[in-house]
Length: 437
Picture 1 (cartoon, one colour):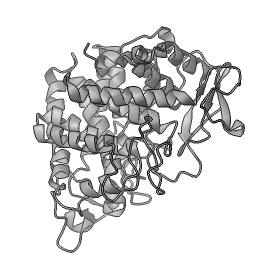
Picture 2 (cartoon, rainbow, N blue to C red; picture 1 turned 30 degrees about the vertical axis):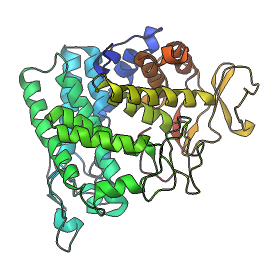
Picture 3 (cartoon, rainbow, N blue to C red; picture 1 turned 90 degrees about the vertical axis):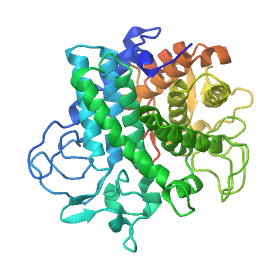
C-alpha cells in the first residue's frame, strides 16, 4: 500500500485529540508566526525565522527595520521548520487557514534560498573567492550558500546545516506539489522554488569528483548518522522535484554507503550496527557494534528514512530501506521498560539516569550519546513541538506498517507517550550546532 506524508499528516490516530493531525494543527502555529512577513528596511527579512526579540535567526541580528547584524552570522538551518508549517497547511486542507500556512511555508523557503548564491552583507562580498581566496572555490558558486556561517570553511562548509534546510524545504515543496493546493499562483511559486533548490543539488553534485571537496569529506568525516541521512535524502528529494535521475542515483549510492556492513575508507566504525543502531558520534576505538546509540537522534534518523522510503518505488531497494527502519525501531524500543521498575532480560539499566515516560514505565537515556529525556509532565493535548515530536514519530512507524512487523500496537504506544509528555533535547555537554531533534 502506498504511503505518503500528505496522508500521514491528516490521520487522527486512536485518540484524535492527540493524533498526528492534532499535533501538526496545534504545534505548527508558533512556527507560522515566527516566520516574518516584513520586508522593510535595508535588509529584507520576509520569510526569515525570528527569535523572541523579533530579529532574524537566519541572518543574526537583522530586524524588520533592517538594522545590520549583531554577530555577522548566517545560518540557513534556522529555516528548517518550513516543512512543519507546510504539514499544517496540508492537514488543514484547502481553505483560508490551510492556504495561509502553505503560503507562509513558501515565503520561508524563498527567504532561505535567497542565500544560496553570492551576496553582499555589511559591505562584504560572500562568493566563491571569499570561501577560497587562492583561485576561488573550484565548484559552482550558485547553490553553495557562500554566506552561510559567513563563508567559513570549517566543518565542510557546514554542509549539514545547509542541507538540513534544503531537505525540509524539498520535503515541503513535494507535499504541496502533490496536494490540491498546487494550482494557480501557488503552483507558479512552487515551480520557481524548484528551479532555485535545483541549483543547490547542481552545486553539490559538482563537488563529488575529488577527495578535497565538501561532499566527499562530509561522508568521510561526519560521525552522526542523522546528518549523513539528511544530506543524501535531501539530494534525493531535490532529484524527484527536478526530475534529475543523477541526483536520485547519487543519493542512493550514499545511502548504500551508510548501510554498508563494512567500514568505509578512512573510518573506524560502521555507521549502522547489525543490531539497528544508527550511530551518533561514532566511536573511535574500533567497530564496537553497540556503541553510538542515541535515544533522540535514533528517532531523527528513522524519520528521515521514513520520508525516503515513502518516496521510493516498490522493489528490492525499497524493501532494504524498510528493513533498516524496522531494525532501527526495534532497537529503539529496547530503551523502553513497560513494567513497574523491574529489569527486562538483556537490558542494561542505570537507575540514576532513568526518567519516567509513561505511568509504570521508563525511558532509559543512560547510554545516549547526545540526548537527554526530561521527566514527564502528564498532558492530554498537544503542547509543543519539542515535546510532541516523539509521539508523532512513533505514530509514523505505525503508519508505515512497523507495528505489523514487530507485532506491537505502536499507535497505542504513541498515545501513551503523548499522555505522559516527555521531551528530548541536547545534553548540556553537546556543543553541536545541530538542533534537528
